[in-house]
Figure 1 (cartoon, rainbow, N blue to C red):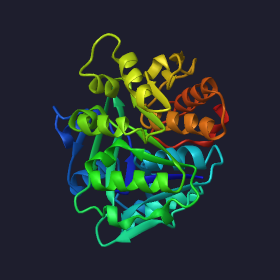
Figure 2: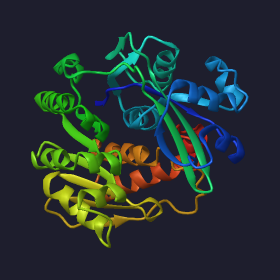
Figure 3: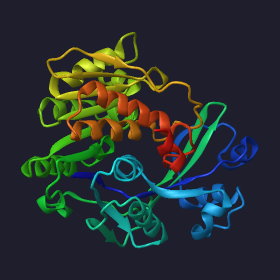
Figure 4: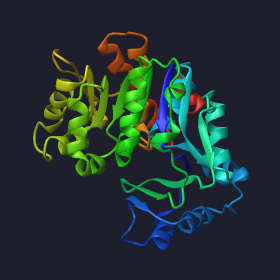
Length: 336
């Protein structure tokens, strides 16, 4: 029913270290933000919390490992595990220990991984540090990672899917993006796109605009930073302007606003706002956008009114920010 495309498999290693340790490993001036690093750097971070890098025992050592990336989060941590939607992930992984963790994580949530290619390259790794003084630190290694190419996919990969989900990071692979959209439409599926990050929008703004103007994107998600980049820079009303741009070309558009909820508009309709979930303690915002997309898309798949889709998205986002990392816990689902 729902197929997500993830060109590069990545395993998230979520663990918390104290500020002094983090500074000693990444550098005092490097705390916060996202950086590309080598595998040894991530291993050093993991070792700093007492793990001996035995990944099979990592959960007992205070490190949580699971399939990461927007596509995996939206399927595994959202639609498949909690909403009961039949999901499949199409992508590529290495034939290594990280790849085995990636597959195991998806299978635990009943995600179909039969279309996941296995190659000679490695599987990506990422260390995610919960916020310290409001700053979230992420370090990613994709060196030598196995990657999906346009020639690897066919209409068979999308089967009888009703929806195909793409993350904006696919813009780095224009041929794969165009091929995926064409194949999705050829099997009658609707395409949902998440703009991924303001850096992606900044680098590929012309390509994003061309894709939107093609009229082939049914639903598009972005946050207010991405909306600002889409409209030329941060200013008062940039979220509303970004929403208007998206809604001019997509049937449904949603801009997330963090603790202020979201803005939603249907093409030809009137924009409306939906408040964020209330009375919650925010622990870590990792994966909030992915969970919002999962809840919102579930509503669309079940043909709920847009107001209810927005409510489900905000509630799902509210559930995930109460835990560390992008993995919903049983307590998260009970709260939701």
